[in-house]
Length: 329
Image 1 (tube, one colour):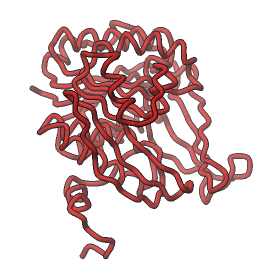
Image 2 (cartoon, rainbow, N blue to C red):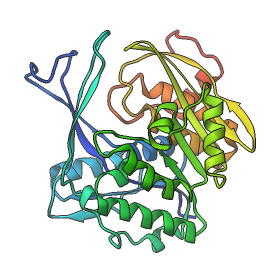
Image 3 (cartoon, rainbow, N blue to C red):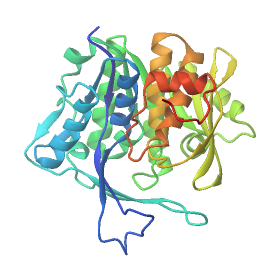
Image 4 (cartoon, one colour):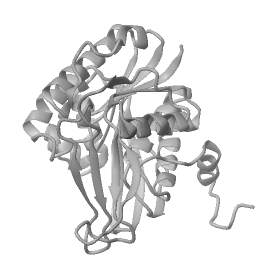
């Protein structure tokens, strides 16, 4: 196989005011690159998988910035669809502090990825050399044509015997719960791995239970094709101090991941780093290893600015082994 993992979705330019300023008051913006599926590819690549990222980008400095950032982490970008038209999406992150929550403002309408159509990506050529395919609920939410392109990608993955992983990733600012339920039901019915949160499971599939374990079990009952349902769990005593863990339901059994208390620097992209870490552990070993690497890598991600993780496999293994907070010399 040429690739262990191929991911498909939109990456945007992220702009954020420094020093907890509001967008209305700032006179400068920090620039980062971020998008769920690229975040996943980078996380898995950094742990050791061979990853390719597929998207549609405008051939201008912003599009090249995104492709360059993927290549910087070793992710293959040779299957990106380039266009001279359209635009690269933007989004703004305003960091909060208790009692003000952090917030996101999108400026992504009519982006190059939103205008992708079925037939633009040579999936047969790409997926015949691939072990696993990953996308999220954000990609089909971008537009009707993006939804059809996502369905095509998943269908082609199934035709080639590729494992399909989907992160539910519901975005209320992109589509309604009814639209999400209609499209994601079709996609998840073809997947082997589902990654989600308790909140998204309720908003998209109407699953509400008194325990995370029951949510995962109900989802597997709804979609018996799933080998694994993984749920990330965050407790937020404050904006900048969280508890982070995950669990997985597989073969009628609940497996729990490690628990980390996190002093958060930037939580955006944490779920994506979990997905990348989980897929690394799952593809190289098993579900338990997926939870170990997924939770550890995503905990470390939340200690660096930006959407992308900059941690290493060795750092994951060190904190999983109970490493303390003394300076590593």
